[in-house]
Image (cartoon, rainbow, N blue to C red; front, side, top):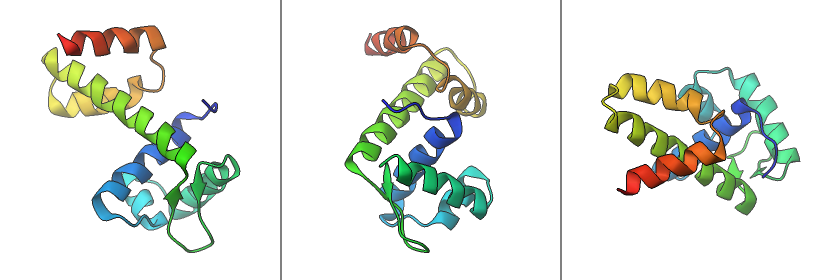
Length: 121
């Protein structure tokens, strides 16, 4: 996997979420979902494009590449699993959402695998 920053992982995840809801992804929608500026989104999109994770022409929609989609899905699945785990522990919905956004970027592969095993029980 490409060594992505937490922010870049968040951008990929946001693109996937918007795409699944609206089919078409625009920078302004990504900015709105993540609570960031449009120039910040444009800078991040250039990095993701350079890494072959998205396709985007100036002022056009954003599309995940096959590689970008694979990574975005892995990030989103990790997010969902951690949130489900926290909810199973009795953490409130609001705290589970906030905490899983932080945890998903720093959790070890071993711990993540153990969470997935726990959730299968």
